[in-house]
Amino acid sequence: MRRSPSRLLWDVPEAPPTKHPYRDTMLVYGGLAVVIVLFSWITGGPVEKAFVVAIAFFVVASSWTAYRWRVQLAKARARDDDEAP
Image 1 (tube, rainbow, N blue to C red):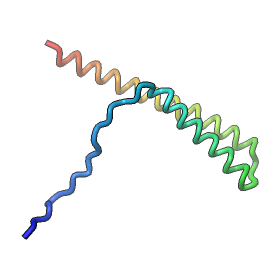
Image 2 (image 1 turned 120 degrees about the horizontal axis):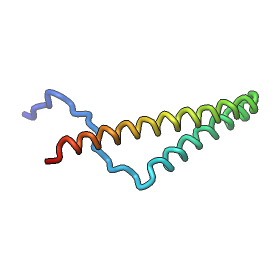
Image 3 (image 1 turned 90 degrees about the vertical axis):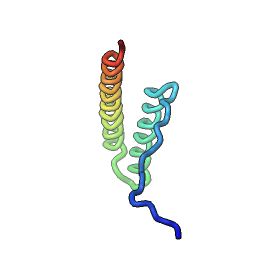
């Protein structure tokens, strides 16, 4: 009889970063900003306000991501410095 696992492992394998992570992130956020404007246009909403919201979304999301990546890089460098002989 086959025994079922006692615990499921839901870990995602670690993928290497892309060659241009900042550019790729900006493209994704830019695409989402376009979706915001298109959604407003399709539903008959105020496109001007949607454009302002899309720009604000792009700036805030991009800034937050850049900040988080810099923090992670600083932690990785500090970890590497601590491990160095």
